[in-house]
Image (cartoon, rainbow, N blue to C red; front, side, top):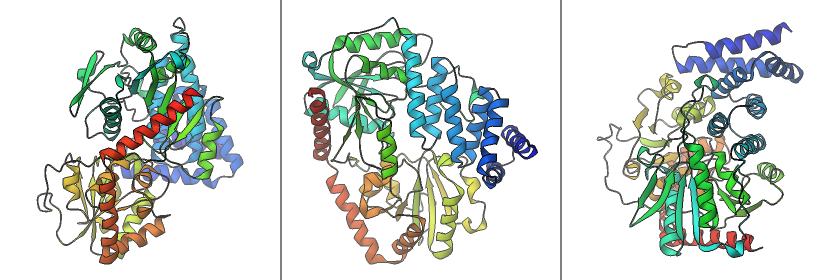
Amino acid sequence: MGTKIEWVKTAVQLCMASFETENEKRRQFIELESQYYAYSPQIQREIMVLMKEEFEINDLIYVFSVLIRYTEGKEFRKNLMDCLIMSDFDCDTRAMLEYQAMSFVVGEYKRKRIFRRKNIEKFSQKLSEMEYPFLPPQKRNKKRIVIIAGQIVSLENAPTKMILNMAYTLQEHLGYEVFFYICPCDWREVDLALWHGLVREVTVDYYRDKMAAIAYQDTVFKGFQINMGELRWKEYGMMLSFIHAWNPLFVLNCGTINPIVELIGTYTTLVSMRMSVECPISEGEILIRLGKEDDATEQGYEEMLGKNQVQLFMKERFPVIPETVSKSYTRSELNLPEGQFLIAIVGNRLQSEFNDRFVSEMKRMLDKIPKISFAIIGNSEGVKEYFKNEVFNGRIFYLGYCKELIGVYGVMDLYLNLERKGGGFSSAMALIAGLPVVTLPDCDVAYNCGEDFIVQDYEEMLHTVCRYATDSKFYNAKKKCAETYKKENTEKKLHRFVTEMLEGIIDIIEK
C-alpha cells in the first residue's frame, strides 16, 4: 500500500508545485510516469482505484489534466475521460470540459463519443419544452443549407477558410442559399481550478450575440453568433426554431463542439464534418470523412456508429486554394543564416505537440547533418525549454506567428511535421510555395500532401531529411511534386469536392 500512496502523493505534490522552468516540470512528470509504468499492471490499476476512491471528482479531473499535459500515459487519458463521463456538472461546464478534452486528450474516441452523448442529453433536458416535428426530406427547401461552426475568425485560421470556401462554392456556384450559425464554447464562468491551462474557443467580438454579415471574396453570408452568456438559452431556442422554420435540405456541422448543435438532428438531417482525417465526434446522421486512418482506428470508429449513422468517405481531396503572395522575404530580413539548409516546423499549438521523442530526433538530425538548422514558425511559448541543449546553439530560430506564411516559406528549404493530427493547412501552403514536406502517416498533413511526402517512422524521417539536405537530384524531384500539387489545387477541384459531397449527402437523404 505504501508504494501506491507515495506515488499518488508525489503526483499531487507535482501538480501543485511551482517550477523555475517548464522543462524541469516536464522532467519531473516524465520521471513520475516512468515509475508508474515500472509497476505491475495490478499495482497500476490499484493506483487508479485509490485515486478515484480518495479524491473528489473535481480534483481528479484537475490532476489528470496536468498528467496528460506533461506525460504521454494512455492510462491517464483513459481515466480522465472516465472522470468526465461520470461527472454531473451543469451544461455550460460540461460543454467547456468537452472542449478541453477535444483540444488536449489524444485518442480515446470511444470515451469522447460517450461523453458527447451524455452532454447532448443534458442540453436536451435543458430545452425539453422545445419539441419539433420531423421535417420529411421531400418537403424541405431543396436550395437551402445551414452551416454551423464553433468559430468564424480570420482567413489565417485554416478551418475558417475551409468553411468559407465550401459556403462560397455552395452559394455562388451551385445556387444554394447558405445561412450561418456560430456556436462557440467560450463560457467565462467555468471554475478554472477544474482543468490545468483551461482554454476557450476564440471568437470574433463584433459578431457576439447578434446578426453577422460574413464577408468573403465578393459575397456576404448572413448568420448569427451565440456566445455562451446569460441569454444563450433563449438564443439557442430561437436558433432551433429558426432552422426548423427555414426548413433547409440539411444542416452541415463543421466540427462544432458545442452539444447544442446535436439537437438539430432530432428534426432534420445533421451532417457532421471534422476539418481533419479523424471521424467526427457527433450523433449526426451523416459523418463526412476526408480520409481513412489505420485499420484498428477505423474499426474503433465503426464500433461507435449509431443505429442510423452513415460514414460518407470523400474520394476527392479537399483543396487548399493558392494565395497571392503579397510579400516576399530575404533571410537577412528574418535574421536567418545564409548557407544553411533551413527546416520549418510550423504550428500554433506547438507547446502541446512537442515532446522529448521528437526533440531527440531533431538532435540526431543536427548531429548527422552539420549544414541544417530549424526555424520554429508559430507560438513558441513553452517550446524554447526543449532546446537548452548546446547542440541547438545557433541552429534554431524562432519566427513567431507569420501572417505572410507563403512569403516566409520562400526562404525555407523543407517543411518537417512532428507526430500530431493537425498541421494540414500549413503543410499544404508549404507545397503551394514549392517547399517539400516530410510527414508521418495517418494525420492531416499526410492526407493533404499525399504519398510523395510520407515516411513510415522516425528512422525513415531521419534518412529522408538527410537525403533532402545532401541529394540535389532527389530534392528537385520532390520540388516538382510540390509544383504539381499547386497546379492541382484550383477552384475547379474545390467545385468537384463540394459537388461530390452534396451528391453523397442527397443520395443518403433520399434513401
